[in-house]
Image 1: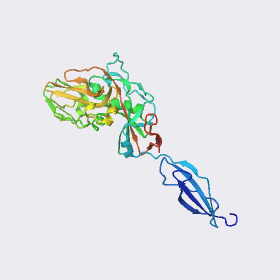
Image 2: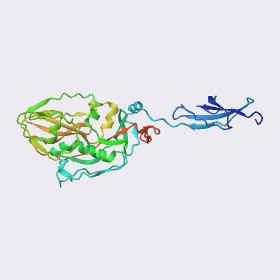
Image 3: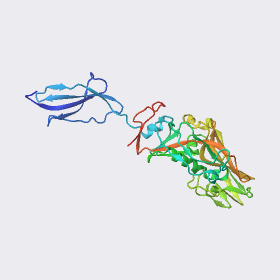
Image 4: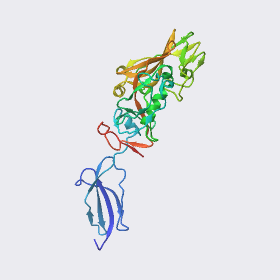
Length: 355
């Protein structure tokens, strides 16, 4: 009152309704007839009723009207995201175009052939994205559907450059600034969540049918004329190759061209993520026998993890097979918050907000 003056402000909150008992967060002694207080350590995505009680120096109190306020939803932790495999995320790539290389020089596709030989592609808009994996502050999303069909690989250079072509196409079209990078799906994305355990064997040929694709010199799964490759696994490549194929006197090859139905081995919650359409996988494969070796690219066909023939020691050109690409996006969780809004459904995907 006018005689005794304001002694303190009491800040209170309730989580249920205006009429419920309020909890005191802080009582602040009056020094200037005004006061500001920031409520802290509140639960996320919760409605609170906030009020202030003014106490005069005679001990009399007057309460303000309780005002409702809802806190923002907190970002999802790495552990929470890992438990949300298959949930939708509202990711939007910066639209790009891939036109790295044209025709047989890199893809092996026959220039001027029936299917065309131009690798220029435009981003397919409105792709939806699902959570695939989370590890080491990296969130991996996979496109709900395949994209950019008609990606042709053929012959020795199709094998030589397949991994880099697929990854660069996805990187060009499905990245976003410095916090999200596109790449192609690879074999390890699938086998990580599979119970399939192949037992690969090697085969040595002293008269291997003469020819092998040149990337084999750097593959860890082959020995050419006594020299073992030491650089690449079958999902690796960092440089394009234009020289096609070479000839060997002796050749040792690890047989990796195995195939299986996804439904037999892949964990249920990942099955629908992979079992969508027909698309290339950015992983090479090879078979070998006493009379020669053959080289393939991995692909998915109607729920079957297959190997598409591209080249053999006894045959210089394989068919120009057409498949789609299947982009995966790797998001740096140290640079964005995921899930401040949305529930992860198709109609309400988790949001992404730059920190």
